[in-house]
Image (cartoon, rainbow, N blue to C red):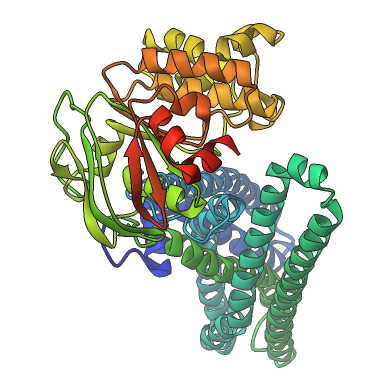
Length: 565
C-alpha cells in the first residue's frame, strides 16, 4: 500500500475512468437528445415561414413528419441515456464500496483508527453514492453544453447578434456557476462529516443498548445522541440553504440571460431583420435554454458534493497502516513457539516471555491495559515500540500480516457474532467440512446452546447474537475460535459470563482439544488456570512471577488475591 494514498481528486478521476465507456455512450445519446430538442423550435419557426405563411400543405406535412421523427429520436435517446447513466453511477459507487471494504479489512489495519463503525458505514454508503453520482452527471453536463452550442449555432443562422450573444454569454455564466458552488462544497463536506458521526454514535448506542438499560443510563445516552443529531441537523440545514441559494442564484442569472435573448430577438423582428418564424424559433430556443442551464446547475451541485465526499473517501483509503508490511511467511506447518523479547508497548515494559510450542500457558494481568497491549502485540495489530515478538524464531515484523494470522489467532474478549446462524458463526474461520467444528462445539459447550434453540445450530442469531445470553454468546465465540484450528490460539477471558460448572467442563475439554498446539489464556479464571502447564503473572507491565497455578496460589498472596477475588 503506498505511503501517500489517494487524494479526493484521484478518487473522482478513478470513479469516472472506471465508467469511461458508459459515460461516452451516454454522452453521445444525451447530445443527440438535446440536439433534437434544440431543433424543435427551429423546425416550428420554419413551419410558420414556409408552410403557414405560404399556405403550402405539402411543406406543412413534411415539417410535421420531421417533428415526429425528432420526438421519436429524442425520447428514445433520453430513455437509453438515462438507463446507462444511472447504471454508471451505481457501478462506480459499488466499486468504491469494494475499495473501502478492502482497505478497512486490510491485514495491516489502520483504516478504523479513531473512526466509529457507523461513521465508516456512512462513508461507504452516502459518500460512495455521491461520488458515484459524479459518474452519472458527467454525461448530463456534456449533453447540456452540447445543447447550448447547438442553440448558439441555430441562433447564428437566424441572426448573428443573437448567436454571438449566446456564445459570448455562456462562458461567464458557467464560470459564475462554478464560483457560486464553492460554499455548497464546503458545507456539504461538513454535512457528511456530522452525519457520519451521528451514524457512528447511533450504532454505538444501539450495540450497547442492553448495557445502558442495565445501568439505567438511557437518559444520558439519549442526551448524547440528541446533541450529536442536532449538530448533524444544523449542518444539513446549512448545506440545504447553501444548495437552495446556489440554485436560486443560477436560475436568476439564466433567467436574466434568457430574457435578454428574447428582448433582442423581439427588437430584431420589429426592425425587420428577422422573420416572424425566426422570432418564434428564437423565443423557443431561449425558453429551451432554461433546461440545459438548470441541468448544469444540478451538475454543478452534484460535482460540489461529490468532491467533498471524494475527499472523505480518500482519507479512509489513505489512512496510515498500523503495522509495516512483511514478506516472509511462517513455516508450514508452524511449530507455534512464541517469544517476547524486551517488548515495550503501551502498558508493557520490557516484557521477556517464552511460550513454548504445544504448551498451554496462562497469563494473569490485573492491569487491563497490559492485557490489551499483550493481545495487540501477539495479533500484530501494532508493533512494539521496543523489542520484538517472534514466531518460531522469526520476528513478526518480517512476516506477512495475512499469513501470520493464518497461524496465530487472537480471540478478544469482546468478539462480536455475525447476523447469521449459530453454525455459520462457528464455521466462519474453519475450512469447509472441517471436523474441528464438531470438536469445537463440544469443547466450548456451544452444542448445549444449539440444543436449546428452536432450530438448533441453524437458528438465526438476531442482533449479532444479542438474542442469546452473555454466557451463550461467549460459548459460541469460543467455538468459533477453536474451530479455526490455528497452530497458535490466544484467548482473552473466554468464560467470564459462563456458570462455574460449565466453565470447569470447558477448561477440561479445552486442554484436550488444543493438545500439542500452542494456547495462551489471558485470564484470571481459576478453572482455566488450573489446566495450564504454566502461569505467567504480569504486574506493572513486566513479568513478575511464573509457575504452576497451585504453586502460585500457595506462595503468592498477590496472585491468590487476583484469581480468587
